[in-house]
Length: 250
Image (cartoon, rainbow, N blue to C red; front, side):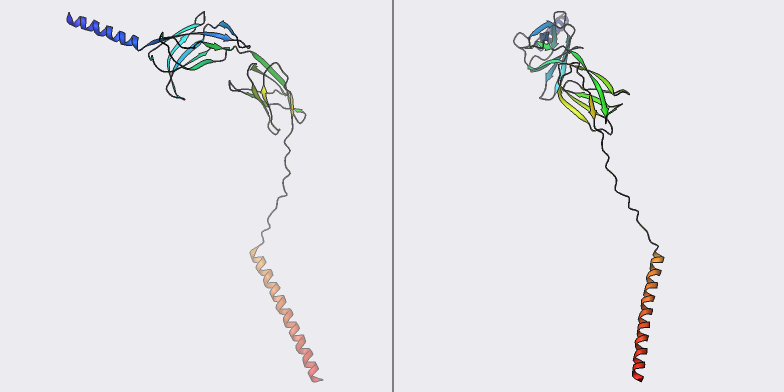
């Protein structure tokens, strides 16, 4: 009997410890309007809680999904520390708030989340290179949110759907053409057509073909030249001797 009572007491103690070392984080997810005001609540957002271990390191500790009224509840084991709470849902930009602490009622201080609705727009146009349609040209849009890209068709035409409330860096690239870019672009059904300049190829210098002489022929030619010089010297000496002899006899 005493053993059974001991078991029950131990279970009760463990439950109390579990309750003490756990907390419930609650919050609300709403839409943030373009003018900065708060709109309707967002149902079905994926909520994730991370314990901030250091400046660049976190540990996922709990997840939840927001209800019809946009409210969510996260059950976590760690009571103390700072938390990063994030929200994600298709068609919205990710939301999040970091450095949050739990108050005495186990509710997150200023922990309500807002998410902006992604408003899609299309940029389009025709890309040419040297006045001719540039088939296969690459149009890329880079941002802190996401990167997007597409290529032109045979007529040099393209369309690219982008979030309209995000600034992009647009790049236009085509092989053998000079690349171009436009900064701080907001997509709003705008025509971005462009005629890229062709890359001018530098003329190549004439190829120098080395002439390889036959070593034997070179040595033979030098030998023949030496013999001619020696022969000429001998002839000159003979002529001088003959001239001197004739002059002596007179």
